[in-house]
Image (tube, rainbow, N blue to C red):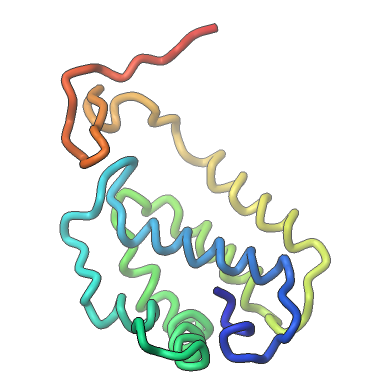
Length: 159
């Protein structure tokens, strides 16, 4: 959830807040996963660097917002506490995350009229720089829901 909402600084929920939430989900995936269908094996939810910005179950919104603000808003903190924890599989998305950060948190108290388009552009630029990894990422094997490999190879469907 957007820190402005959590802290009560913004009374009106806005689409920009949803885009900020999308950014947090994107960062969470890059930190907690190690590829498609693969939970990160060296990930510890209880690690203070992770649990700090996620908040505690009994915390109020203002406390969660303050913690999120501390981890994400100073660029040095974002680089040290968030980007540094991205799994190596997502290394190519660090520049994307930094671009999204700049869009969302530079002059964050003013609505940005082109934010949706700008965010799409950052994602498109990141995706254009990444090779297609639909097959071969898991050595041609599919993964079950629990992450175990199956014997069936991944097949590309052709139309």
